[in-house]
Image 1 (cartoon, helix red, strand yellow):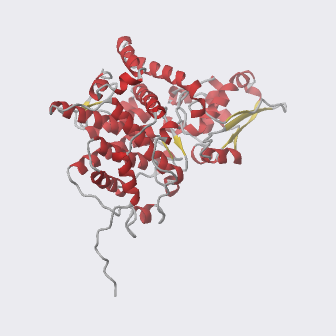
Image 2 (cartoon, helix red, strand yellow):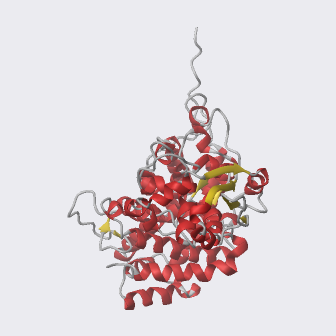
Length: 480
């Protein structure tokens, strides 16, 4: 005879409480985190503006129903769209992730914490306009920075020891979780409402990594984060209307997240939530390449002159790398689309060797027709170096090391160019930030006339002035 279960509501799972408490109550006291958040903001928005050059991205933008009018709606930078906050979050998230050209976090799980900016900006712009209509003060950009720091921290700390990709889940699950927590708080939600929203986020269906891996790599990887952060805004708004939560969403036997999707294992939180992730975030500054291959491309570019001079003499190319790169971007055989190419280590390196640079246009079909690319790819051998894999996970190093060496038919070889830390690493901030600012300026000029670009640049270079700018005024600077 079966024993009926006791239908007693449990207390909320501790991980839900910890995230909600941090999102709603924790005070960020790190000037470095706020300055880095400003750099993250401008880099992320700049990448979104650059993505507007690509029709495959822009075809996904705008209201779901053409002609929809939304009073007090949120703006989408670089466009004239005024949308409801859920749709705006998708639009912003889609543009900023399309080219895979801004920040990255690498740990047991990988991801891009700036993906949360789609939901954060849409929600902050929307609630600011609602507040003004109700005679209340709007949010200011410091509120956005605080939400960014907390979203980075939630996503990044959860990623330190928890590998969702090992269970076949895509890393945007953490975008949904982090965005849900900070957006609910940003919209004025209580700790209980944040817990309710988070529980719904965890028990949601979660994307599989199918679209990131051979043989199915495709453009969904460029809009998946927009989908996740927009879903977070939707769940946040529902919680604020009183929609119930599920306190043991994680731990419920048989039906909870742990048993269904995490092989029965609870989440591991290696450290408390503070501002560690934002302070240590990785920027993609020099080229739009999947981050595990950034240093390989930099090494290839250093070998460009040798490769160009002795191209016909190349016999073999050794790519020495780390375990995560081999798992994600080590790819042979045909490459079917730009998304396939920008997640192929060999393709990135071939472009660096041939051209001495790498831009988003190099992933497009026209550039891929150069027969020399596949000729070089066929000569490449990938090898793991154990020390690279160890240092990748070392909390005090977080290196993303790669090495490239050319071997020629006459038995000679080029130097072995090894680079441990990409230019966007915290250890190279002094070198990287001026380049990041130049990248932002170039991206602005790809979309806006000179006067508008200069007004945005002037404000974004001033930490104090930017932090005190009302959110809706900041967003209006990006309307075209």
